[in-house]
Image 1 (cartoon, rainbow, N blue to C red):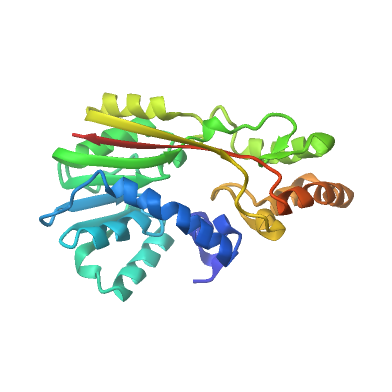
Image 2: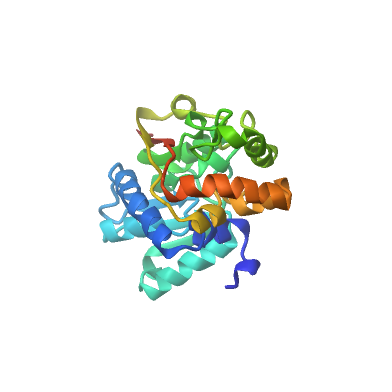
Length: 291
């Protein structure tokens, strides 16, 4: 599938999130495999039970469940036809089609699924794209059987975004803050911090949504990291996009800067990136609950 024919979700997951850099992809996967394992540690598909993986993406959680629970059935659900085709092709190559179903649906509208029809629901970095988060939790609760298990993972972007003046992507840009603010304005226009679903919630809001939806035995684990960046490749830094809806740094620079401003910004920031002279701040939350 040519990249230009793919939707934004498929383009980002399969290429843009790691800037087309295979080494960076390895780093991303090294981070995501433990996430997958932790999400799956809170569900049980033994005895032929069924998992609905909402926003399955490239299949990280769903394929992990198929491997961990040899008799379990998995429904791959996503809003992206391209990603559903992708994971269906992977399942076919792995001889797993007999244990899989592929359904197009959004997290806040699972109307294609009957009430109390699945034993577990999982998500990974899905609610950050959903405005109607309470409705999504209501749908998770509706489709679960009594005693069914919910296990989700969500970045808490409010912890580190928006960055204060003098910081860009974790780097101290005080000497070129005027340019940095022009660049940050590109991202703020696309994703306003106060109203965008990526930044309009924290871990306490997830608990509130779960309680209002009717879940019991709700557990949340918050993990915070403040550490130097792992990647030092300037071109990967330029070409990677933080999420499917925003431009890469290089694309944002093309929108915000003149040629001279690009040169000034690059000459200052590139040495910092290549020497890892930044601080990466991040927070994520795991939530698991029972219906």
